[in-house]
Amino acid sequence: MIIDQEKINEAIRTIQEYGGHGILNCVQCGACSAICPGVKAGFPLLCRNLIRHLLNGQLEEIIEDSSSWGCQACNRCTEVCPQGVRPQEVVFAFRRYQGNQLAFSTSAVTSQMNLYETGHAVYSDPKELRKQVGLPEETPTSAFDEKARQEIQALINAGPMGELGLF
Amino acid sequence: MDKIGLYLGCNIPLKAPDIEQSFRKIFPALGVEPVDLQGATCCPAWGTAPSFDMDTWCAVSCRNVVLAEQANVDLMTGCNSCFGILSEAKHYMEDEARRKRVNEKLAAIDREYKGSSEIYHVAHVLHKKIGVEKIRENLKYSLDDLKIAVQTGCHTLWPSDVFTIKEDNPYQPTILRELCEATGASVPHYSRLESCCGMGGMRSTDVEKSLGLFRDKLLSIKEETDADMIVTTCSSCFLQFDMSQPILKERGMIDFEPIPTFYYTQVLAMAMGFDPAQVAAISQIDRSGVIKEIQNEKRLVKEVA
Image (cartoon, rainbow over all chains, first blue to last red; front, side, top):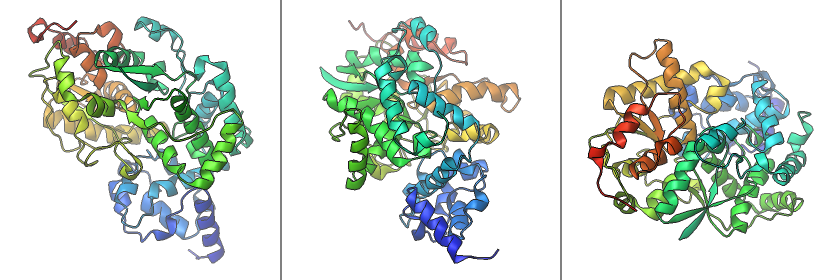
């Protein structure tokens, strides 16, 4: 692999802009990967190995890899990192880079649409189940509150998610 | 009576409203009145706004927190992900520049985030505000000689530096164990106590990897505890244990019957005498045997009004 300083700078700048501020503190000790459920489950590009690729300037090269979407955001890595990297923030910064380039699976589109249309990322009609257990059929949430839905749509439209062309 | 804002999230009110009903039954009986946060939305889940833009994440999260602020109450959620998301958003809002930007977004919908409401998990309210002693005093049935394996889940444990309310040691969580022990049940330790169940982004990204991780944890529970039931305070862990055990069984990847799984407040509600048809009615796994056993006449400790 040819190491290109321009590409390294671009990768680091991108990750830091998307919230991975601690990436340059990483010394590749691997404490994060040792405790990461995603690494244990077999996702190839999380924690130490993801950070290694980014520090080598390999940003575009790994844009299609789905590992970051398998991150549980559990933050075990953040807890153990001796360098204050907060690796989960780096993983999510990379995910945000992918997300804003629309490099994610179609299954992830559904939850964005649900959030926008109902205010709930996970939505199914709850009326029958709620009636069964003796609750009012309608939840006191945005699902049955037009004003709340308008508010959340306004918040989403006012940021980069509104420009993805999904809604 | 103490009041607390009941932030429902998504899975509990929409997919598992029997868990919501268990909150509404037990909390007033234990001296805490849940107040609805009308118009609350998703926290927003990790796979949505947090995966695209931090300011949008903070704006949506803080709108939910503002609903509690405006009602002058702290906020309580039964969902670990919601607890993690809302707590982290509050943490990020300590950055003055972000706070200003996000409050500009909120101003457009006539809201302002002040940061005056604390984020509690249901387990925290039970353990720290109500306390195990009061739980014991309100039992109608004792779960003596029943064995529980506990599943705390991830998002109330890490990163501990952003949580105000937390475990003494996130690697050795004790809150749920003590809450379960308060019902009279025994709660044996198992080696993968704090390991991840594989739900969440992992399951929606790669279900086979998720099931693999889940199976490791489940085998540890079965072999090391042989529990009568699994009890969790995470609604996502609940769904994973309830829907994925039957899948493993059907595929021949486990050689035992799926272990009945409950959200903690469902077990407590039943132990307090509430109707299982309202508080523990929805599951993939057949839980009727253990439900009947919990409310067995021989377990009666006293009559509560």
